[in-house]
Length: 328
Image (cartoon, rainbow, N blue to C red):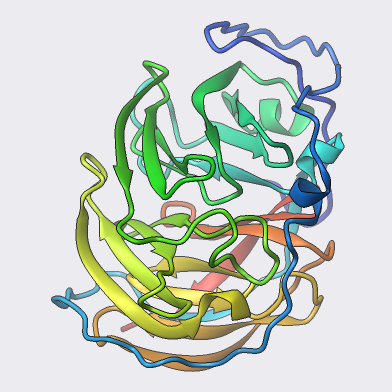
């Protein structure tokens, strides 16, 4: 994605079946259908809470950060690429694959509008031009409904939380099938331990230089963020950390170089990246790195280690942030 500065808006998405591949450049604007959403879906039990700490447990083994990694020291201003056209796109998730496999490339982009009670449509775009103009090359229809905005794409597959469950599914984008499903042990779901904005964001998947991660909480952790490293092939838990950061007290989180970063507010224009949890040392530290919620409602923030940018969804708007890392 090579947009600079200002805002670029696109047209309405065209509906396609899961097996249809138009590869055409002609738009046919129409309204995206979705199941009748109710107040529970729209409000997403938007929570307000204070940042508190709870005791951290021991971790399993430590791993060194890979060469070229560093600690986050700066986040730039948001650059806007698209705006969703319907109420279904107030919240959502958009992604590129940091390690694409054929037929996909680093330019292939995916988008999910996350308002609704039966979220199954995943819009696929061949390149940046298609994405910004609103010409999807395909629309995947998932065989199982997705929960909220915690999905991620990695090595040719979409990883997502199934609706009203602690189950994470791996959906192969090429074969259009779910290849693996696994419960995240004891993870809260469907509003037990969401981020402060609510949204059933109990299970949040992430990718960084070290691989695939999942952020959640459990009754045993008493609402503190639990972080697990997952095997991307089997979804088995490889390592687990219990942090001292209460999940409902932060607005979102992302991983960079094996460190978990949290954001203080989903709506404040002058929010901050306010905590870091380092898996190498099993310690947390307070931070104060400026983070702008330009449109007043950030429902998704993820890091792409190949692009070295944050991708976010802010109140209908799909944006990116440049970042700067220190050297280790």
